[in-house]
Length: 336
Image 1 (cartoon, rainbow, N blue to C red):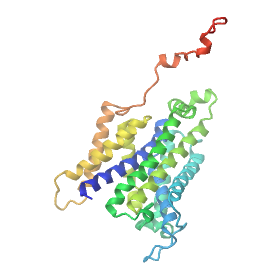
Image 2 (cartoon, one colour):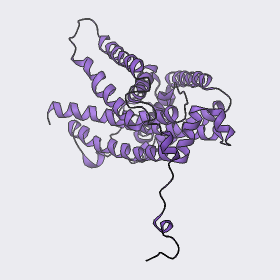
Image 3 (cartoon, rainbow, N blue to C red):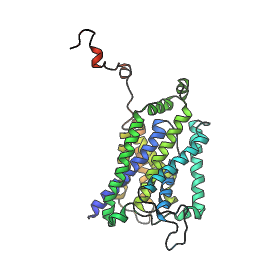
């Protein structure tokens, strides 16, 4: 397999995974208006749980013993990663959502992320501290027995399968009464409560569902790269997911897809082709953040709601009566 095919397949896998991550944040912020500044923590939770439930109890050659050291078959570790992230979202939501405004809630989520980051990094017996998990088995490769390059192409089907399912879930949620109520709460909590809506319960649903998406994305990520450590769990990664959502357009699933393509496949990759500068090993990651940040500033300046913003229903569409059924059009005595 050529290096070009391997390179394109790698980008496609990251594109699929970041679509899932962006949809989860879109449910929390785009649908329900929840400012989650520690979204990457839910992704990390899914990655760690998926890792330790597929690695086994002890890492060969290291002597490190993991909690939940199970050898569970695909796709159970991925689903457990999503459920673990959802459970963490539920705990944070129960504590914070009912009592705090959005700005204070954002501070709380950021604080929780810092606490968990420090706990995982310094408590070695949990997930091997700052060294992280390594050698995570590749999902289904024990059955198909593919080489590294070929498996990268095969993993597109694995990530695409989960992305397709979660697209259906996010799309149905967007069109459902629950999704419409989430957006009403996002626009004005007081008005939604005046109409008898339980805003706490509905925002809690948004928190849990969005966290589940993040956990699935994290589980797919660790399955793809085979390792995960606190280095991949930073505010920089949260910034990238937020940039995807804001550049593409919040409240719009296609906007998240466009944002993922622009940020992951274009802006991030463009810095790889810049001329190298000797003795500046950290220049490329810095330039990536600069390019993404500049793109975000430009979009927010000229398209504050994103390139593909949420489509608002017009007054005429809201007021338009439903077309009468055929039986209702027939007057009595005029039936055929």
